[in-house]
Amino acid sequence: MKSFAFFLLSALCAFSARAADPTDLYTRVGTDPTFQELIDTGVIVPGVSSSLNPVPGSTIQVNHPALERQTGVHGEIPDDIRIHTQTNPAVLRGKFSNFTRWYQEDGGVQVMRLFKDEQNIRKGAGEKGSPGRIEAFFPLFPVAPGTWSVWEGTYTIIEPVGGNIFQLFHEGGQLWAFHLRMSGSGEIFFARRRPIPGLPDRITLATDMKGKSIRFRVLANGADYQVFKKIPQVDADWQLVTTGSYVPAKDNKISFRWGIYHGSQAGKSIPNDGLIFVSGVSRTAIPATPATEPPTAPSAPPAAPAAAASS
Image 1: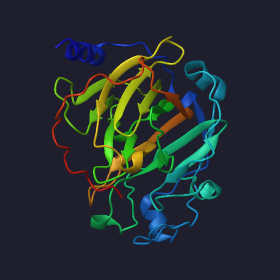
Image 2: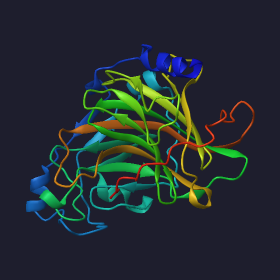
Image 3: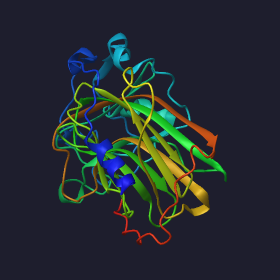
């Protein structure tokens, strides 16, 4: 009961995030055609999987001094990542510049955006399409026994749109351990894929985040996970959000994914333009010391629900 009260209090507590007028954080140079115009002009072709055809977009020039006042110094973007776009699920770094409509990098900031009415068109458009995503991810990697793999990153919400902004992936049949999600109104919350007795399945982490920043720290070992949050330039210490466990990953292989994933429901599309900045991303490994070991888990947690298809 004490644990539940702690997590409930964490979910309900208000915080003070530094807010900016989102339009002060960047300048847009150029214009972006509609989704239908891209199809009509042959820039994207529904039904073509894993296309590397360029899909250019307007340039987002980040106002770094303004952004760093609320995020701190950005750091470098990891080299060993790939991106998943509306037309290709695994773009290598050398081809990132082909997809500036959805993904750009500017001085340590990952610029990720989706546009109203867009779909993932690799299986077709309209009723055959789905809302899709723009995500960056680390290819599958094994977590060494006795260690945690640690992901950190700071999100700045410019134009919120509903979807997963972070996903922990376990190799194997059950796939997704948990999500960090964003609503169209700018709420950010934790969503657990498997119920754990005594712990909430949904935890509100922040509300009204347009123009604001929040940083997350995720520890994962292929079976257990821990999630922390902090408001950059405000909070000195990490705040524990929750802990949990999931179906163990095959060969202990996992992946971290971040960006905007609106969903895979056939016939649906992106409801409104979305734009986020992600900065300070890192992946490190630390030993599982007593301070980071997970608490005792239930001896027989409920069976995991079937994972939704991801495309």
